[in-house]
Image 1 (cartoon, rainbow, N blue to C red):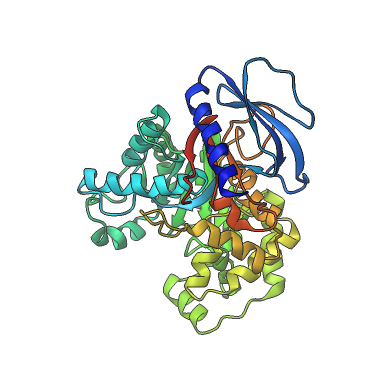
Image 2 (image 1 turned 60 degrees about the vertical axis):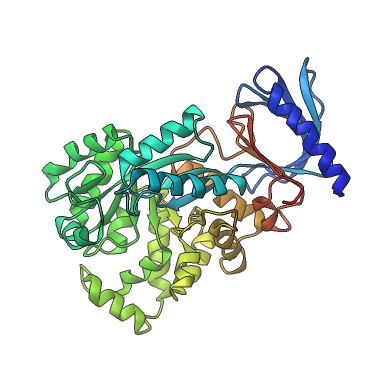
Length: 422
């Protein structure tokens, strides 16, 4: 697209911003990338009204009083999602300062096409307040769905000295120490009251407690998200519990350590001495995950930066075996208008894990929505929320195009339009 065309296009979209509350918006002649990699990109017409996709057709729909935007030569995808982030684990002793930082981080995410986040444990009141402000329109940012972290008391005792403003670590609804099965039911009820979507099963728990937490979370309408290894419990214990997702593909290598349980210090020492991946053990683990419909949240970018190269190998095999992969970073996001790590994660899913671009897009859209229990987004279909990216280049050729959107729509509203400089 030449510079003149971009300027005219953005002027048209300014009109959308004024009229979008009362009028329908018809995006015509775009190439639509569904979010489900099995659906081939196609030319179509996308009608938005009242925050939702009213129709997606290959011929022009008959609709009165719609604002029509010609998207010839452009591409539409679902909004992106980072399925592993932590927004509320830093120093929160100065709430105003912390919030300014969070708003800068999430604003940058939104500009780069990220419209939803799965926060994998942090201060729930802080996250609830942020979520409320986003929903009310007070703040422009991605929607956030967050977890409570459950672990054994030994873990929280170990961590207590390093968390400013969290002296009660292990004794809140969102950071909860679990000692016995009798603790589980009330702890999950309290977490649900704190607004969480899932329980993050983290560390220092027996396989019996992992199963108890998973089952009770599901009974109370919450999801169960776990680390790949819950020391002293082994990865197979986690997979057999029926959790909804397992994070950090590299953790699965700890299944190879002999014994019914694993000690965290000794396990990591073995890893860094060059613990070699056993392909038979790996496949048994992954097939168990597939059997239970457990998603793999591999955090390959995080692993590569920490020289944990088994993560990519395990993720590649998981994809071959049909385990669903979600794109999450567990990485620090910049506050300024800078590149975001979700691009790095997705590029690694393609370059090292055997995915094509459409499959990587599915990991950051449909799969990420499903692992979070969200049925209203992640694909471009009638009745789904209009969380959409309008792109000037084809992301099936270059994933970079996803992170330079011309327009970001969130619930049908234009929340970001690129400037000429961008």
